[in-house]
Image 1: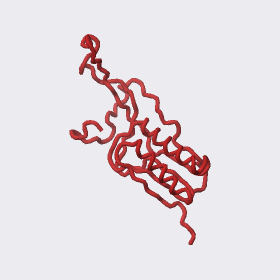
Image 2: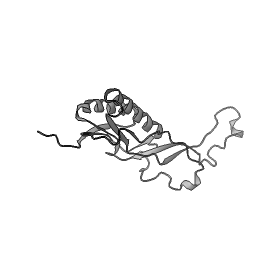
Image 3: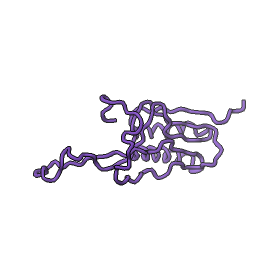
Image 4: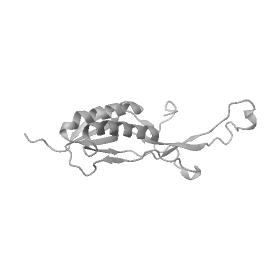
Length: 169
């Protein structure tokens, strides 16, 4: 997050969205994928360890990387994945021109509100970003898939395993 040294990022960065003209198209294709009605043993979660802002392109690339890796080993009906965050925050940019004669074209910091150019999700420390439900035999494949997807995210994510069904012994 920009300006984290100077202010605390609490709540929405700019709550009055009626002044922002237009909203960028969200890049996330699906929030639920795989076999959503399946019967699974284990839930593998991807948590973030820091308070960060994640853009919607990073969320979508994380989802794609994890799903493609797991689909190779389990097949399309062998897992269920779900994104647990939604990018609500509109990020703005004040475009300035840095070329010869630009002083006639750009306003500098006058009327520097900016246009909405991207969306982001503000994530708290310890919040779940993505979860995958798999059978017991595919647990290591799900861990590997989420570990490969961690590279796409800012901050330091961790992987947590939760048993959905108690094993009979």
